[in-house]
Amino acid sequence: AQSVTQPDIHITVSEGASLELRCNYSYGATPYLFWYVQSPGQGLQLLLKYFSGDTLVQGIKGFEAEFKRSQSSFNLRKPSVHWSDAAEYFCAVGAWKTSYDKVIFGPGTSLSVIP
Amino acid sequence: DAGVTQSPTHLIKTRGQQVTLRCSPKSGHDTVSWYQQALGQGPQFIFQYYEEEERQRGNFPDRFSGHQFPNYSSELNVNALLLGDSALYLCASSFRQGRNQPQHFGDGTRLSIL
Image 1 (cartoon, chains in turn green, blue):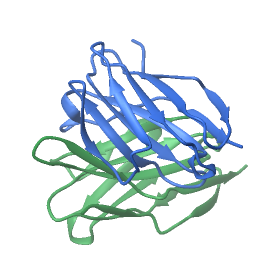
Image 2: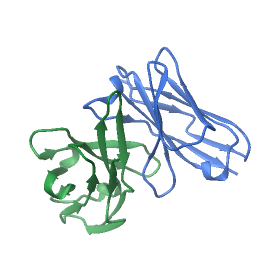
Image 3: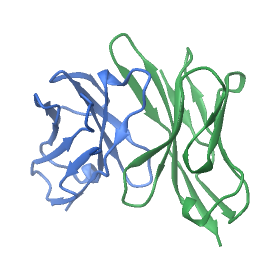
């Protein structure tokens, strides 16, 4: 069965500092992976996705993530954080079964940004 | 291009009542999935509808049921509401059950049980 862990419940960074949010997954085959962001009271917005190919994936808002199969990780990075990046971030792992896809979300990491 | 729309935005019910939440998928999408997101947690999968049938289900009791209409819109019904059903209910849409593509989410319905 798939599972996702996000070891950091809450992270605080200063504006302009770099950011890395950790994500580890468990799945027997090659999964497809996502990062979503959620602002308070809003739905989830897709930041980036990995299905296959290049393991370094570029997303929106200057975010990128790297798939490392050997470490079962898909960490999200941004070189310089903006105050507007403060939000909840969710890593998700999906797998295509015989007739449907199944997506499991991690518990989320809350990001605070100090001006 | 309209995204995923959900209604109502907020809802307050009391224990034992029944509720219906509605979702219209993104234009071009034919698959709808429903998630429950409790405060401070990640979304938990409830079920997915494709071709007007429930295709898969998460670990939710039968009190949670759904429907998909020919125009691909969907409803989530919850009977005999419990305090623990208080959550943000998210609808996500995709095409052909989402194979090799991400889901698009609506802004959710905030359900409060008193």
